Each structure stands twice: as structure tokens, then as C-alpha cells.
Amino acid sequence: MSAKSQALFDKALQWIPGGVNSPVRAFRAVGGAPFFAERTSGATVWDADGNEYIDFVGTWGPAILGHAPKVVVEAVQKAAVHGTSFGIPNPLEVRMAELVVNAVPSVEKVRMCNSGTEATMSAIRLARGFTQRSKIIKFEGCYHGHVDSLLVKAGSGALTLGQPDSAGVPPEFTSQTIVLPFNDEEAVHAAFARHGSDIAGIILEPVPANAGLYLPRDGYLESLRNITTENGALLIFDEVMTGFRLGLAGVQGRFGITPDLSCFGKVIGGGLPVGAFAGRGEIMDCLAPDGPVYQAGTLSGNPLAMAAGIAVLEALADGSVYEKIDALGQALSDGLASAAKAAGVAVQLQRIGSMSCCYFAEKPVHNMDEAMRSDRERFGKYFHGMLQEGVYLAPSQFEAGFISAAHDEAAIEKTVAAAAKVMKTL
Ligand SMILES: *Cc1c(COP(=O)(O)O)cnc(C)c1O
Image (cartoon, rainbow, N blue to C red; front, side, top):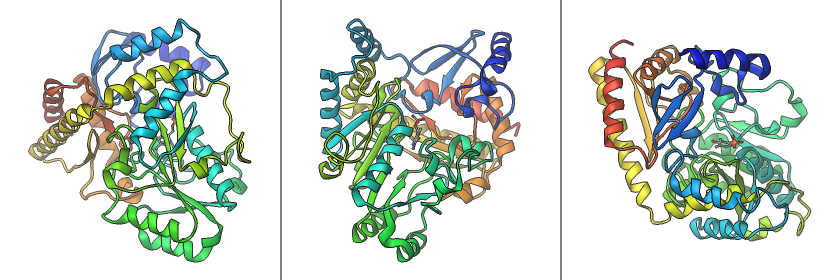
């Protein structure tokens, strides 16, 4: 921690609750105070004191092309000249919708909004409106933004702070939310046996990445698809993190599952504030102005955000970025695993494509309970050791790390060398 960041944080603490505009940034899970980022480029972040870090947070997922990629900066500059918001349809919205519909087979129509939270909030409202049912199933450890009714056993910041539930959410608001363990087909069958005709849908991160990162067991996503179809409920994939990150069609493309609705955010906005929800036309047409489900946004489809998102999606279109970042992901996980082994530190390197988590745990992780068994104190030491070595990891054991197209083999080697050094001190 250096002088300028510390001075900024001291002031921030006076004027901003906890000094941050989103809780996980406060480093509470690892101790110490956050650094203040002043400038970024590619895979690098510089803090207010001029320290340089290789970044594996990538603004929590959006920066798939790295920071400040030329195509995005130029697209935003070009759009800004013509106005930063119109509040009336603009051509970029149509292009964005076309890109999403063409990339994701389950999507026939898409509505843009301003954050992942808005996307999931609106998707469950739409599912309830379409099915005319009330109950929603969510899973422990899955984070869907800070939507009242979904802040139950949510991951991410809520988990890190040790408060899976939030104050200020009346029990009535979560009374229609059924919370089940992930990767447990029996639990879902039991819930449908009991509440079947009241269940509007299941919302999940098909690859949960807000309690670290763990994968669905073989056949699990298929079982969710089948049981929702059989019961007239909707399957909602929250691909805010995984959408356009694990391939153009996200997890649904990788696993070959067709959800009814999907939520997007992060990558799709190119680093500007964006979310989207999308799906079958018949369902999407229940939205206002065509249908009875109300949803709106003054800044939705904002021209700067659309321009940034379009630039990213066009850069991803030929698939070569995924080949690169997935290969680097593999190299990083392999390198970290051998560093840990050499140091005699028990870790579980869990990865899919360019997303990964290094759990300080004895056994593989398949759900939130197992994630909670990891050694958070050890993670905190590892985090600070790596930061000291110029590597910025997400400041919590329960977050995924991201690789961008701006990372290269040298960055991975440097990171693995740092880990080899730090792991020996744990
Ligand atoms: C980040 C995230 C959200 C929330 O998105 P915001 O833009 O932070 O509101 C929702 N769902 C998942 C899976 C996420 O990773």
C-alpha cells in the first residue's frame, strides 16, 4: 500500500460508505486497504502511486480484450461526438441486438438495460409474468446482482462479508424464493414435487463463479432443462459473467443447453454500464409495450455503451480470442498447480476457459458448502504476497480470475514465478 492510495482511501472513507462504490473492492476479505487505479492498458493496471500490476480481475470480467483496447476507445470517442444519450431509438441498438441474436441460438429477442442486476431482476419478473406463477428457484452461492428477492445465500461480496442475506430485505420479499444447493438434482426434484405448479422458473449461473468457480456435474444442466420443461417453468441462465466470455454462446453453447431466458452484462458492455436479458420471442413479447410485464430505462441502449459493446462483440466474432485466452488459462492453472505442489500447499485449481479459481482447499469444490471449507486466511496471505510481486488477483477467495486477449505467455510466466515464490511463504 502506498502513500497516494492511502490518502485517497482516507478521504474516500469520509465521503463514501466504506470508501467504495461496491463492497468487494474494499479488500475486507483479505485485509488492508485497496489501491486506487489511475490508469490501465492491456493486461496492466497502474495505481495512484505508479505501481504496476498484471491484472487478473479485468474489471470483474468485462475486459476480455484487455484494458482500453483501441477498438473500444475509438468506438466510444466516435459515438460521444454525436451525443451521449438520446432517449429515443438509435441505430446502434439494432446492431447490438443483431449481434446477440446471431451469436446465441436460444435468443430470438433481446432487451438492453444498464447492469447485470437489472437484467436478472427483469428476467425473473418476466418469467413470473409469462408463467403467471410466483416462485423462483435459485442456488446457494449463485450471485445474481443485488436484487432483493435473490439476495439469499448469494455469493460474491455477500459471501465475502459473511452475510449471505442483506438487512433491508423484508422476509416477504424472499418468501417466493426457493434456495437449493447447486449440483444436487434430488433437491430440485423435491422442490418441484412440492411446489411444481407454483414455480415460475429456475435462475442459475450455469457455471457458478461468484463463490470461487465450480462446474456443473455431468448431466446436471440437462436435468434442470428437463424438469423445467416438464413442469411448465422457465430455465433462466444468468450468463452475466460467462456470456461472451466462455465463447460467443457462453455456457449454453459449450454445454449445448437451450435456456428459455438468458441474462447478460459485463463483456457485452465493453466496460460501460450494460446489462441485457434475452430469449424466446414468445416470452420476450410479454414485455411492455407489447405485453403486461413492465420494464424500462432512461439510459437503456445508451449509444456509448452500445458502441463499446458492439466493438467488443465484433472483435470476438471469429473466435480466435477464445482460443488464445483459453490456452493461456490452461497454462496459468497448470503453472499455479505445480507451484503449489512444489511448495506443499494444498490447492484446487478449478477452471473453464479463461476463468479460474485457486481454492486453498484439500478437496475439489462442487458447491458453496465445499467452497466455504477453503482456507481464507491462507488466501489473504497469498493475495497480498502476489500484490507485492506485482500481480493483482481478485481480493477474495470467492471470486474468479479472468484472462484477457491482452495477456501473453510472458505475463503468465511472471505470474507463475511470483506464485512459486509466494506459495513457499504460506
Ligand atoms: C456481476 C454479476 C451480476 C450483477 O451484475 P452487475 O452489473 O454488477 O449488477 C449478476 N449475475 C452474475 C452471474 C454476475 O457475475
